[in-house]
Image 1 (spheres, rainbow, N blue to C red):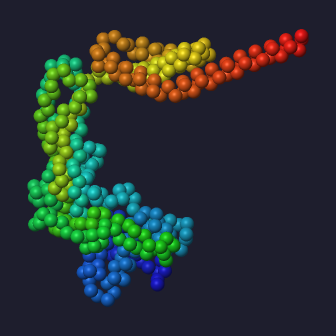
Image 2: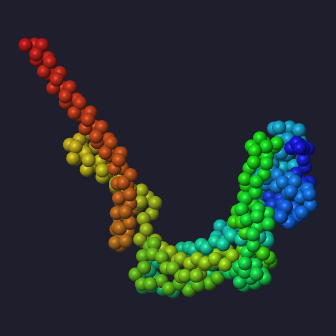
Image 3: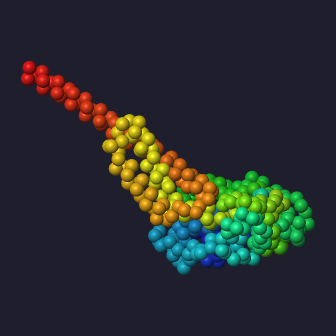
Length: 374
């Protein structure tokens, strides 16, 4: 069997040494379909299929590819030597192999590439934050919102396939969702099971991928929705509009549009929240210290966060706030209290035990001295 250095995995897949991961994946898919033993009945088809799978297993993994390139160059430390290197930047060559894209992350949508994997997934919700002033939140209002979402592809009806609604068994893995590659001669790891790049582990593929959506069944588009904000809305309230979120892949259900109301006057800012949490942190020390009668011993621990919290809150101002603001303040106090309760219990118990030990020492020490004198 040829050694690792003797095999040109790039030539086996028919790709350039600077090929991206996506180009390597496509090349493997093309060759695997032609060489799979269930399709190709030539005597050497199975061996060639294993060789192609072996090449893909090495070149699709960045670490293995670097080691392979280094060993081909003759230097075990010269990763990327011999004029080749691992792909830089986007590891998928600008494509979105899962068909989900980046509608809200700031990245620009790219041209959809064909993806045969049949992978039905329910669409996610689209969450939109809408800030309102006090008057609009109290009286209620109507707002029009324009946003981006994944909509069902009209060309294929959302199935991802042009002429048939049914998927078929993946020809590369035979429906198992993975392929086995023997890398014993390469890295000494024996047989490695890896996710099939054709079906991406699902075991099924789209029969004839739609050229518009690339086989996912959905496309990125701009949508509009009218949101009715009810009267007496508060910070954090949510208005849900069913079916206006992202469409699912391959005909799965669509998510909802969720409008999250924001009312700045009802929210604690970062400093106010920190101040109330500091006060909450001090409260367990006051309670446990009073119960154990060691309040004077933990006074400093109580005073520091208490004074710090009051200073921040009073400096920011506490006047003119409604009940929702005070409710959020109470929640911050309780959060700080939960953070300090265990610490306070430990400190108070420690101080109490030390005080008792000192008292016992004084009693026994005085008794022994009086006995000796007598």
